[in-house]
Image (cartoon, rainbow, N blue to C red; front, side):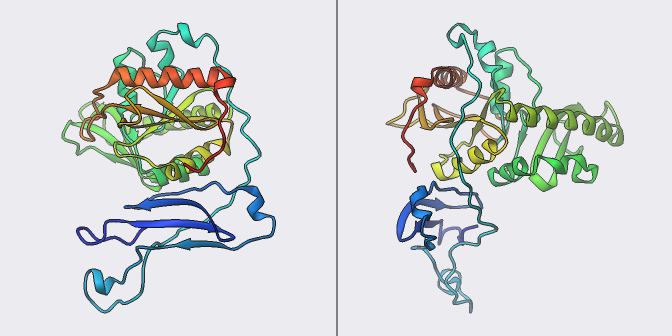
Length: 316
């Protein structure tokens, strides 16, 4: 959590050093989760881990008052993981002759919002998926995967909301910050019956998601309308790969160096795809379906062709 104030201090930069060697930089403007790749040789002598905070500031200087502490970041936890090597997902054969609908059935959304699920609907497919029509903060998504979504087993954690303007019930899963569409109207059943029905469904979809990750059954998709940094992508990728050899496709806004439909391999199993425009967060209606199809086809090609899925490790 960075120390920020609207209009006065918009973000905090962070440089991480191991044994005095800078291994990565990040800029945080909101609560988030960050990860950095550390070359193994830097840990052989048990070196010091340090953080540089060039934007640390006193609250008294930013907003007034008596608090003269220098503040930069509040850390919830810090974890170190050994990565033995990327085994890779199961190969997907004949990817070049798949129809668009068949292609997108090989992918599964991990949320942010409903856009990728709606892209699949535009192509006439309705796959079962826990997070297809949900949204949640990235850091809480990482927590949920680390937890195995076990908090979904407790009905007390699932709140039913029938106050939406569309007249549809929605669910809020508090421990993971998940807002979840049910597509069931409030006049169709009462809230208690809906909770019972949805709990059974959620438990099934939770099991399918965790089994799919461990078996490398799908390529997983995450997007955010603003630009995700490598240090924000890496925690989700690492979390998935602690459960299985998962492949993760991040969608980013296209820019001058990355045209719509392009893909970029950041690490074996970690792919960035570029989309010309995302739908808004009010209705998540996709506006660049062809870009989504193109990045999925290119991502599947990277997975299907091991020679293309080789890249030097880098910190981005």
